[in-house]
Image 1: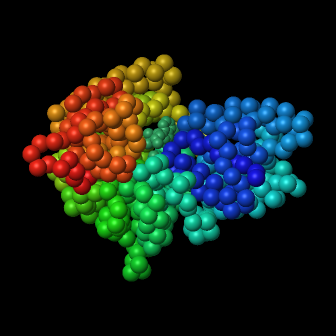
Image 2: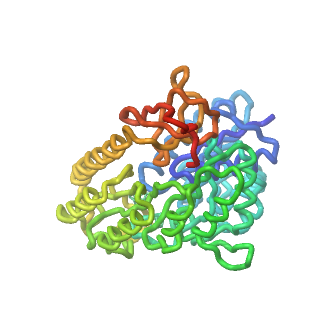
Image 3: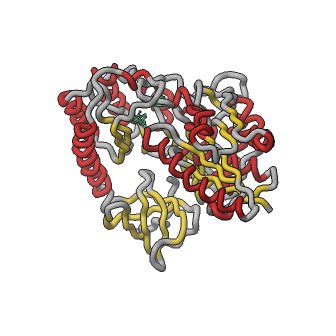
Length: 455
Ligand code: 5AD
Ligand code: SF4
């Protein structure tokens, strides 16, 4: 049997897509390889968000080139496909730079992968960079739960693409315009996942809270309505969604956080920067005060809500004062976890040739200051868990005998002892201690408490 090896770079959407591509190739008779060495087909599912991510692909292609040649000398064929956002952004340029590549396919064309590979047999270097998300989801084989779940937790792509056009971001170009999958298809996919033991669904999309898919009633459903419908499916313990734009945090979504117990009180809501001038230059279409007010409203709806964000330092034109405004926002909000990046000019985006590019050394220094503060806040949030009773979704056996490990509502990894629980259970624990990247906890045994609760 032939085997395919698929390597994912970048975001969760790629992880999900890799699962769907594995299904497409399984229908063509390909098994899954765990290393490139044992594969007949290697697919790199790439990320274009920052320069470093995109460059990783070319170093991997260099290694694959050596492997392909060695194998060719032994009479064995290796086919190499570049998929994902670099494929979409660079297309034919990839084949020019790396002739080892047999085919290039953008995120809109995964359902056409087998046809493209057949085409590449006679025309190596075939490229498919058509956008056709609607057709894609209709044509892809039913997702197999094994491939798109991580144990008890699974991703569900509900939305793809973005119409926001932040000035630094390639996503609107590589993933195309915003499109939402119909509710019925999502409920069906969710049922399949839940039937196979999944307890937690993370709805994913580049701009997931802009979701407006067609409901069974023929009308556009909001993310809040979709969440409500998913929460009603048997077997759902936890729901999450990511990534969101502040402008699309609608009233009904805030209300959903108050009303749906399965919806976890943890929200990734990137702000990127805290200076109004920079937010404007970034085309974020909100200011820092609006973001702060939004956070207050979210916390009013769900007092135990924790927040995480993405930040960019060194956006063109960023002064010390602008950076200080970001630091002030960070100190004011107190994020539970965050991702932060140096600005990376991306070809084709408006900011790439804006005036006032910030020197690398300045970006380095600012990133260090920001990350030190974000780490303090992350640790503070973890320490605040100590002594508290929280729920854990059990994922697997823990590091030591008698331990089980799983996640809190805030995605902390927990090592818990004394539990009589099975994988997939949601149980109450009392947090006893923190380690740099995880928590320790024990069963809650107090009078009459069975140690189980809904998430
Ligand atoms: N440079 C640096 N960071 C970027 N991001 C997106 N584009 C860029 C860029 N050109 C970051 C943003 C976004 C996250 C996924 O990646 O913070 O939220
Ligand atoms: Fe990129 Fe997100 Fe802005 Fe869309 S909203 S352009 S995906 S950063």
